[in-house]
Length: 162
Image 1 (tube, rainbow, N blue to C red):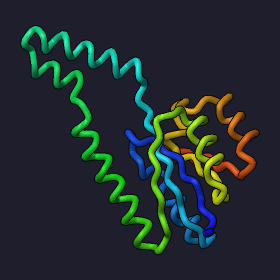
Image 2 (cartoon, rainbow, N blue to C red):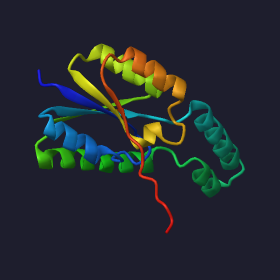
Image 3 (spheres, rainbow, N blue to C red):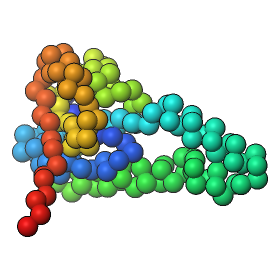
């Protein structure tokens, strides 16, 4: 079985943020890449939006309801487009890619995935996962202690005004 890099990113954000680095690293190390898409939506927020939209719809304000909770159709199209982009980038450089989607929190998703897959050589956390306090310091420490594999965190390059 060919070794794989595990690239962890959020499904509902800029999925390919940091992907170029992960693909280049996989190509250099002659490994494949597994993309773990963590769905970040908070269940309570989603529920509140649905209930608010339902209240507006009951009052006959259907357009307002659609603006508050547009449903899944637009997001699914964007996700499919982003997934094709990821596959194309990997195919261009000859890197084998596997894509998995999960709804757990980031720590649990990575821990569960590593338990199921023994071919993972290294974990790469995308800038969308490590930035903006998306993954707490406590969860990152727990991941470092339990992963038993190297964990690489990526960050966005800071833009300094001239």
